[in-house]
Image (cartoon, rainbow, N blue to C red):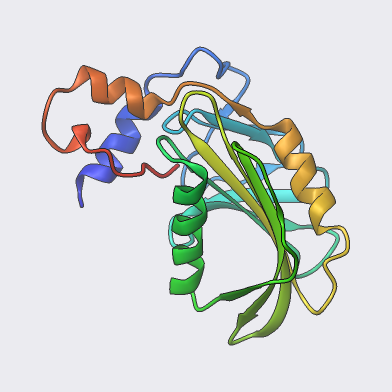
Length: 197
């Protein structure tokens, strides 16, 4: 278990070619204002924090979490993995939410292709009922990202637009995790487990 923080630190040292010096590499405990392009070199995923939001990496949630400065209770979570397919990331994030006491009930048939999946859900928790819209995408390098927007209440209005905006800003290039696996033979770094941001 101690290898994960070490691996994260090592992966930050090498920026894949598609991540530029202007991108802000994710650091635990740091806040990122609207308009910032945030990058996870470990997963090869970068995206822009949307207008009206502020975000930070939350280790407990295992996601980059953003809160709306204008709409109280509106939250967005971004999950990224260096090696995952659509089913992998949907299952992984579903398990994370379930462990946090959130039960998702599908509200539509959703939409899916070979590389994308999205849908609207009722999200039940101890705090009550909310709505969640999520969208996942697999990148050509074999990485994957899922963006979910949620709020308490019975309205999903505006959630899809927020998620679609973040997905439109998303860039997916080669993952630093893959580079380190190739550079380090054997040991913990050669595992094929999903690597988090």
